[in-house]
Image 1 (cartoon, helix red, strand yellow):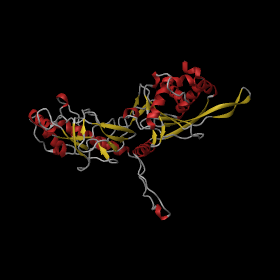
Image 2: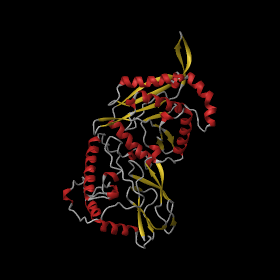
Image 3: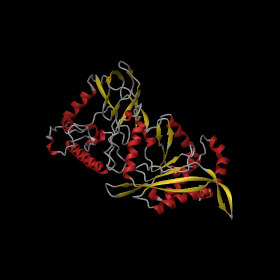
Image 4: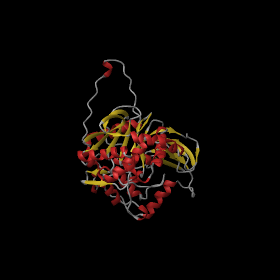
Length: 442
């Protein structure tokens, strides 16, 4: 019997993806968990597995197509144990179990536009913790939401995706009241998002062809998401950048001394790996840098864990994989993990989980050059550390100028939460920890 396979939930705040590759064709036999397609979401490429054993009856997607959560991708031919289509059996069961009848939708707060999809299915950027996120409903791939046909019909009439509605009944069963509550939550979320949209409207572009030949190229998925997210961050966060320099002459000698030891463990002892540990210690001492702002509730969210994102330059654009629980790991362990996730980023093998949950970010451009820059805060984080190229400079020490290796650092921060004096202390603490490595053991 025919089963329609829809794109399932892929991770927190992921609402759509672009088809990078279709791995099967019509007529192919597939087994459960066999990869069907590669989907490029925000900044990771994910394999979409088959939920069943069966035959591909129809392929509804093509490479380069954008697919939203809940959108049909394939139709499979599969026989259930009793010879009935799985979907048909589920509907019959729920119809028998529930005596509920269709209810007129006039008692429900409708979404803003009747022909508009629910917010959860739109690719608009939802920034963590700034706007209440829709409840995440975990269901097995291909599994129908537990709701009677009358409830399904009611949800369709008011433009709600029944698969997104969390049920409060036994076994997560969805009632009409659950659909109403979900609809009201979406309207509240829409109002909050509208209030947060303070960015400047784009001006129309001139006709560039008047002055010469041009070429248009579509943005890749990474560039699209980066442009949208950074536009939001820049327009909503009052940025300030604090600059300082760290004397890493002694640290560099230690780095070279122990580099081979870390390399044998599978890592590379870089300044970034050392900074991960230093920043983790700084975040414990200055908790306001390990926080987020919830404007909807006028609250500050302090995090008890320390996850740090590290910007990686790839051929598709800037990716920021996250190193988790940094405070619990040694510099050697951090160096090994950093090498692994950086390689995965360049090979397009990062998972959504490896791109989420960051509290603070580090962007190191020292390998390329420059004397300083002002990194953009990666919302909903409140600070980011920029690292530029170190160089030998004359430093006045003990009554004379001596050559020292100086590392330029720049700290961009959210001035709504962090004051300038706190930012100066935070960055100076990092500089002193780099200048006196023994302090790290204390």
